[in-house]
Image (cartoon, rainbow, N blue to C red; front, side):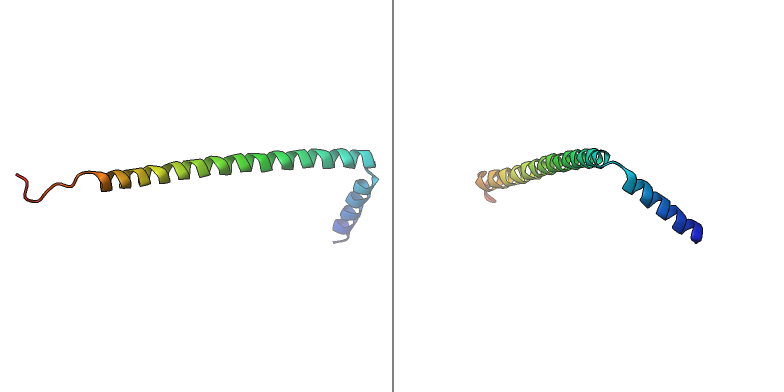
Length: 77
């Protein structure tokens, strides 16, 4: 357990010892990656929405066409 605590303290010291410029660069890179992920997720969501809406309109179009089609008479030969 003491070894784990010592290791954690050493890691904290190393992290704190990083120059502010380095941390700023890491934060900037992280923000860029997050921005790219959000953009990708948004594009994916818009694509899925387009696909769903296209299927929805296809079903509506089919239903309207069936409703508007002339009905066959039961008495017709």
